Length: 189
Picture 1 (spheres, rainbow, N blue to C red):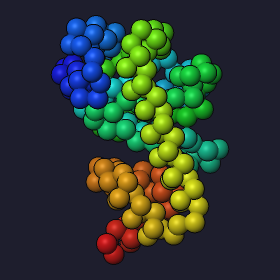
Picture 2 (picture 1 turned 120 degrees about the vertical axis):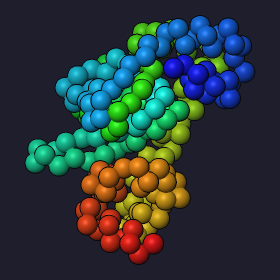
Picture 3 (picture 1 turned 60 degrees about the horizontal axis):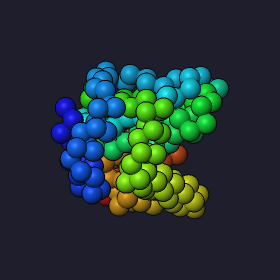
């Protein structure tokens, strides 16, 4: 159950095998059901997740009950409700498993201890933060001027797993278009 996690760290760091084993010891195994909410909008997020199997999303819910998906994470990716994880205030968003998932979970205090102890792990964390920031900035600013077709093409180029594995309803909430518009656009491609 820790093999993918260890291979991930071996591939992107020069950490010794004993260090990787030590780090893995701070992650506990958790299974989550399809559509299980791991962090509710009113909760403070205290966990950092590595996805062995499955996928997760972060979304908000407005006063009319309309969901807006903000982020998706798949196998061999880390995921958390980052603003809440960092500032320890209520999340204001939901962290959900979209499929039955196998996760490795590290508590916040342990995670910060590990990145302080292992500078290479701190660099991995920084790369995760930078990639997340860049992707969200490109999406936000790019989507402002895009029509539905351009949004779908951008997603195919930059985040193809979203359209391959996620329902049209949820993908449309990420793209800011209706599910029927997404279906029409996909049929044209």
